Image (cartoon, rainbow, N blue to C red; front, side, top):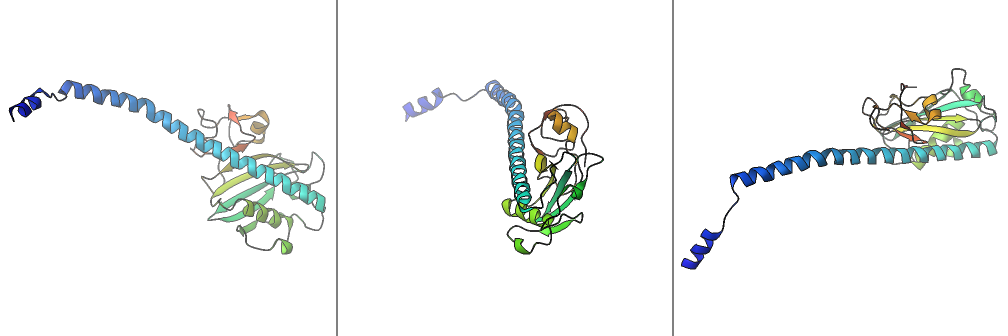
Length: 226
């Protein structure tokens, strides 16, 4: 019994100074690591958004190639410019078509008149794996159905795809909003960079994560909501 008491007395706990030092070290490490972890999470979100934008760009390009083969693709001229704007809410896709690239863009007039026509009216509430492509009223509906079917996991999004002469050149995508937000301009796409939030490529000044294809670096200038 005496030996046990002696052993207990021999054991020493941490002093108050030692505890304060340990707590201070933990605080310093937290101050260093937390911003690093937050930066890693942000970088991962941007990388994922860029990957989705690249996939959408590729699939729209494929659709335009198939449409051209079928006789209702874009006219093969650099003056044939159009943008596809997709707004996704609750898994329901809305698509509108405009010029979206230059002040004198031609919008729906950039496309050939074939077995399917392109219209200026919006296509509303297209959902993945619903509807019949064979009975689609126009090419807009076909495209919207195609993209909705290929990306069924997208439930909320705002997407702008710039196209010219049958090719999809640039795509901006965000899952943070289903309505228009500030996105890179055509000039910024052409230059390969955008101002973003002045610190992180892929994050807008409003804090939205925007994926771009091709991926845009951090530059200067002003963003646009169109």
